[in-house]
Length: 97
Image (tube, rainbow, N blue to C red; front, side, top):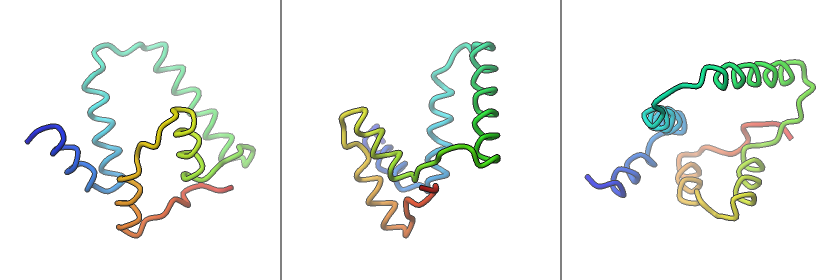
């Protein structure tokens, strides 16, 4: 199986399975963990979660986040994935407006 075929198979996975796979692939590239960076990210995540839990964070829907990311990257990546998600009956309303 070549990389293109592997990608096609991976895109058939659920969102959760694709996220787990992506995480594992990224971790496989990391040779050394910067303990200071890891601690800083953990603190940032904790602080953001506290703001969400307290209701003081401004949230956006996943579709809006994706639109902003694509705009920042100047690309339209992910259209096949979006179509596949819609085909499985999933929507983009995973956040509040």
